[in-house]
Length: 487
Image 1 (cartoon, rainbow, N blue to C red):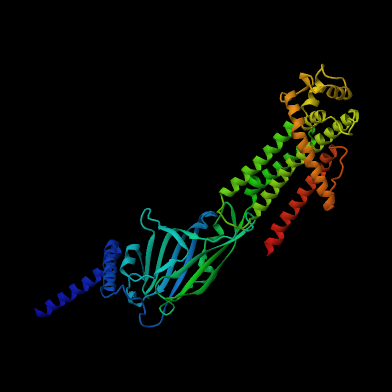
Image 2 (image 1 turned 120 degrees about the vertical axis):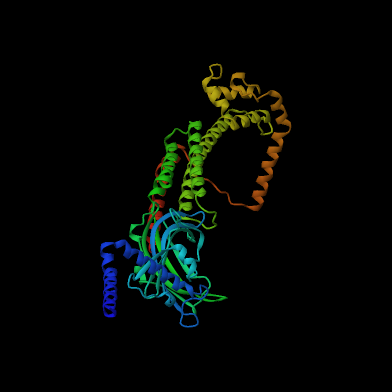
């Protein structure tokens, strides 16, 4: 009986073992439940005696941290704030012997970011960071992956605004270097060592990055030691070389400036007597260049040094303003020469007095005629005036009162009499004093070249202005696109 009972027990034990082996094949969920219990138990055992305050290898060799970056996108680059915004994945690799485990079910475990609050993680931060945020849609974009040998992978996805001190001397034909600076905040070189996991290959996604205003020429990874008063800290740098695309500025700034300068040259082909047309055109082009310059300055920081675009806009403004001054020279030369001819003609027809002087009243009238071209203009269009200039001069000599339709409103006989007694005498006395002083000092006379035809000024301007502007453009673009770029 006892022998029979022992045989039954042996058979039941054998059957239970066989059932335990066969059941997972017929009921997989049973195996999953068992594996889940084993994994949970493993995690509980790992954290049971784990001290989050101590780094791995505490008191021993320094800990090596491998860094890996995946660049998702460049969101914005701001010259005004001297920064740029980037979205990246940051993965950190290290070895923690306290988290090693033995399990036949799994060789690695991927856990949520909440598990990172229960274990030690590196205190890495971005040294040139201004503002950052971790993405949390639909959950916080963090993860922890544990391997059975104790290696840990800690990954996260976030968007950061990083400082980038730009050199805008060649703006907008410039090349900028912006960096991502990764450093340990508290652990110095004795406790922790940061390094790129696979060197330059530790950075992914650069080839897929597209920027509206820049072209990413190259990137490089750098490792250096940052020496501070509290110690020497490891720092990793990812440097981007960005070349600004000038196409936007050609259509928004350079091409409009060129057209405005060329528009100012149209006044050289307009008759010099069309004062209102030429002055209106000159003032319009000057104001337009001022508007373009203000628009460019609004998108840039208030920096003290001169930029490449400032040089171009200032020279364009000088050309536009010079075109306006050119008409002022033409107008002054034309009316000055005409007034001298009229003065000489009247002087020849005016009889001298006994003392060798001319009638001061008549010369007062002549001075007024020279100062205002209205009399000459009206005398040509009025039928009641004299038929020629000789007759007009005789009328002036005969009587200080000119016909009403040949005079401007400010001409009255009382004014002429008053000028005879006061202003004319003071003017003559002033001229005589200046002549006496010049003779005593023997100052050299500066004679301006005589211009027989004022139209020659416009003819020369039609050639000189375009030639100078084309020469400036050739030197400007060659210098900034080839010479300055190479240096």
